[in-house]
Image (cartoon, rainbow, N blue to C red):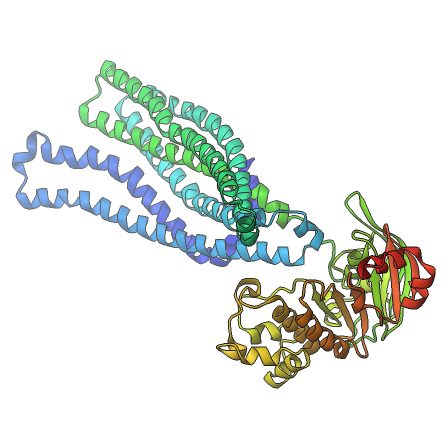
Length: 581
């Protein structure tokens, strides 16, 4: 059952099948040199030197016979090295491919999937669980061939020598005990699978706490949460340690359990050999072969434990790898270039799980309209804007751009026509120039600088130590909020898309930064269809269309003057912010 679970993932081994074949061949040769070479040494080499006729041998003849011993170990060493190196090579390539596939899948899954899961847990799945699965696949490819080969070689020698020594009775005594070694393997394997699942979950939880703590470093210090956070982490770390020790307890019990069962088989063979009067050399060769049968059984037991750990990691990875891509390119997409920017919602509804966010929304926003979205928190404004670039998919109804259902367009074509400036713009840990270039990767340096000038960002950029080549730090940590916002605006200028979404782009800025950003915005919105999500009414008073949201519905629409005069909700929101309500 366990092997069938891993079969679909053997495809990761195909690109390295040449290396894998070399590793397998070397492993089989190692198995032959071990399973048959070592017993034959005891059977033929030692008697040739230490029996009664040794005085008849010259020193040269003895040296030649003795050379068989290092020859066997030389073969084992060479084949073990070749096997180990190429297995490690194949395993590293598997890990690379697996992690890239996992990361790639995360890029195309809907935002709802990513946002519903803890960041640290997704990190743990992509790092710890892929490493575990790599270890499992490569160990399976290695010991899954080498250890059965060693076992078969030893069993073959054992059967042959047992038959020669005494016949079928001796062989049955020797082989009869081997199946009993499966009992501890099965029992311990079940225990490890359950503990491994708990362990990987705990790793994800602990990683999530670590990532959350680092992201909230300022808040931890501001509220004096250092001791609380350390306590939480220590508790999680202790739980992880407890599970690791439980797995170690079961894993370490396997080898002694098999050895105890094996010792019973050897003792039984010893008694049988004594009662049957079998000679010493034959008995030692049989005992050696019998012992060599139990070594690969122990390693196959360890492999079974590793498979259980891998199965636990696989179950966690498959949560991402097997998640359907709900938002994807259509089978027969409509090819478009630059769109005009007409946006329309036709009876659109959407819910986050069981929580409705939009209900039967219908509105037309002509190209070139500056449209403000207003309403209480949770009224559906951001959800409305996110449906245009298909960050989410409408549950019913449809969204169109230029009369085309957005589901009929390639995602790349649709999103190339949309620029987004959010309240907390994300900058990557790269240079300012590379962060600006994200707006349009094919842009020239002169175009990048011109966009920065339009966004009132060029002046402060040139005061930085390396100007446009300054590294901004993780999430732009080395820049102020106003500076990050102006870089985000410069990206939007550079993109020059016909549709612009401003998600509370000035709500977190001081008055000085807001003035610079507002000045840039007035130039940026010219000739574009703009969706403005804002709580600061100073940013939306000049909008040509204002939509008022309440409990997922558009309850009013019009200009500022008309809505202030005729809509109680809009008037109360406006007056509250102005301090007159």
